[in-house]
Structures are given as C-alpha cells and as structure tokens.
Length: 225
Image 1 (cartoon, rainbow, N blue to C red):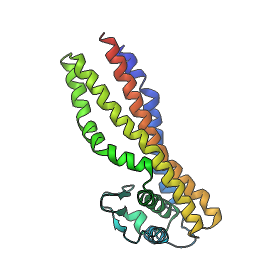
Image 2 (spheres, rainbow, N blue to C red):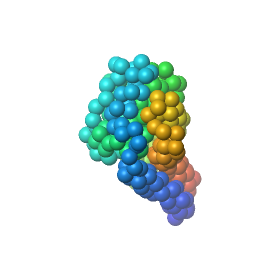
Image 3 (cartoon, helix red, strand yellow):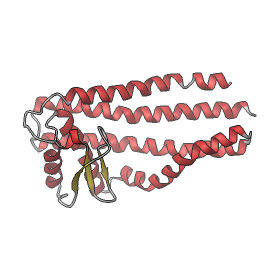
Image 4 (cartoon, rainbow, N blue to C red):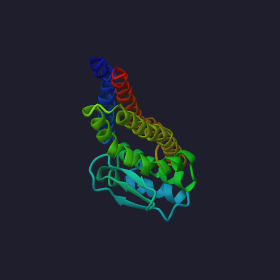
C-alpha cells in the first residue's frame, strides 16, 4: 500500500513540473516581445486603476524576484516585479493587468475573493502545521493525529480551489481592460491570453498536486485499519 501511495503521485508531479516549466517559458518568451504601444507594466496598471476609479490604489516594485507580482488587499497596493514594472513587453503588461484585476475584484467585493480572504488566515495556519501533525501521526502510529492532519490538509486544498475562480476572473478582467482601454492592438490580445493562461495553469497544478497528496494520505490511512 505504501508503494501504491507513492505511485499515485507520479502523474500529479509530472503535471506540476509541466505547469511550472510552461509558465516560465511562456513568460520569458513574451518578455522578449515588445508591446507596440510601448507602455510599461506600471503605465498599464495605473491606467486601468484610474479608469476604474481606483486612484487610491498604489503601485510599488516587488522585491522578491521574477513572478513575485501580487495585489495586497490589506494595504490596497499592487506590487510588480522589476521585469513587469519597467518592462514594455507583452508579458509585462499582461501580468500588470492581471494584478490590477484583483484590485478591481476587491473594489467590487467579488465573492470568491472575499471568501478566499476570510479563509486565508486559517489556511495559512493549516499549511504551516499540517505536515508536522501528519508526520507525528505516522511516526508514533497515532491514527487520530493522522486523521486530524488529513482534515487540516483538506482546508489547504479548499483554499487552493477557491483561488482558481479568483485567478481566472482576474485574467478575464485583464483582457477586457487591455482591449477596452486601447492598451494593446487587437492582434496582441492572443499573446496576452497565452501569458495569462500559462500563469493560471500553475494554480490548477497546485490543486492537482495537493489532491494527489491527499489521495496518498488516504491510502496510507487505509492501510493502517
């Protein structure tokens, strides 16, 4: 049963590695393709924010390297990596528009985002403690601890699942804003969509990997009965 629990993880791990490679190669590819408007990620983000009345949302440089772009709802700040903030490429403006999509969601109280924000503190605690609980349950042979670990891990998976519609919706909003604001030419939309689809794939892969891990844990738990 232990061997089977590891074998079942193989397709999930392959998919995860594929997704990680896909987002990196796609981002780097379109990081070499200039947007024909000549706009930076910062300029695109600021334009979309202002168009949606979000003049109170600031834009800062993120200091955590490539693909560290994110929106901080607690401080109402869009943080962009150097490549995105100053870049005049299709990757730069697509990622910038996506992060602003989250700011728009926040301003409109988009339900999945609201729910994810409520769940985030619990999921954070769960993700930090889950493997310690599971490890203790397996080492000391305490099935009750293993059961608790599986339940806690399910909370982490729920958070990841809730993240999917949030990310997909932000990408959809980004494409609409890029087109309606005239920030890209019509034939450039397809390039933006490729960048955003590749990024979204990483979130799908994260869910898949976690589901695979949950299946593995359930198989291990079942072998103990």
